[in-house]
Length: 106
Image 1: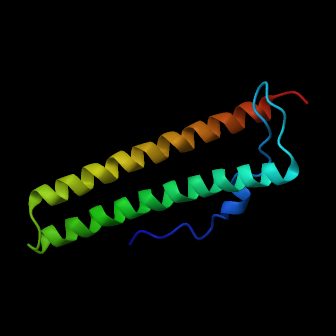
Image 2 (image 1 turned 90 degrees about the horizontal axis):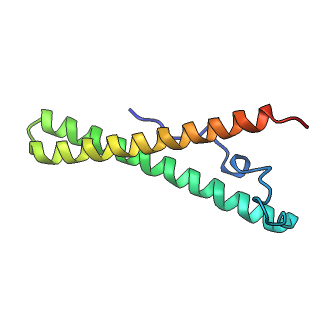
């Protein structure tokens, strides 16, 4: 019911990241490692959110079939809601940062 993130390539999520303020830009190998770890972090966060939503969905279906209690469903749905809100906040921050960088003069 909830699909995976097959269209996202984790290797390209963090590409183009340079050094922060006051720090020198990492070497090409260091930049690749930093980009890979950032992409891995985002990928794991997305997978955990999807797993949480899937677990909540399964708990809801089991409750409708009378196989689980209400408390389990409420806990699963609350956890899924919290995970989804965190994922949306991260997405909003990434979009805002992208828009800010795109408005910068070259």
